[in-house]
Image (cartoon, rainbow, N blue to C red; front, side, top):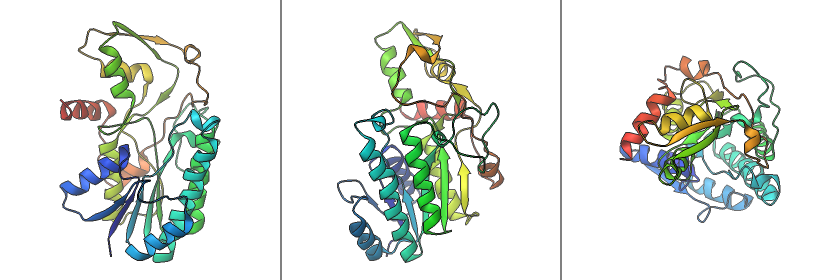
Length: 280
């Protein structure tokens, strides 16, 4: 019997979570797509039944947002909806608590303020539609869940905006970055710590929003990332970068519910500084 199980353990978040659990001396069993195809319902059911975990951190996801609009549409749905339903149903069968990671893309981005956890959802791209359907699959399987919506994720493991900006700055004196999309950056370390915090402190089940505190445009984020370098960051509107998938213009998610648990949420500026120091 394993207390903790992690899906998507080799992804950006799964790797961060496993690193954190190693630091804390927590035992877990982790699977990547090559070890456990979450779209195979019988395989998932058998594996979870065999392990009987108390907690399942469901980090596995299809995250190619633009590809999800066409070539990856089927894969997006298979993994983010069917796969999530398989994991949720299997968790319910053994009485495990499921921690599911969702996204700010479940909102349409038209709210001038902050989105609360119980605000109406209205995804505007295929990825957001699938992640919302995944949320509904989790809710329909059991009440024993935490759904954590996050946004603008960056970290040590995998491709993300921070590494993209740093790499481009090595060969460019000037970079143009969109300045008409506003949200909250999230360090995978902060997110992993919150996931563990919820289950270890037996917090109330339900939907939470978790990112680092303060908001930013992508231009603000890039400017902070490249602070101290010789590369100039120039703001442009999103029409300069045509993308297949619609991005919410204003997807700031309210963090009050997460803060009410007592969990300390660093600002994204503090998180970025800690992250950059950690990888030097």
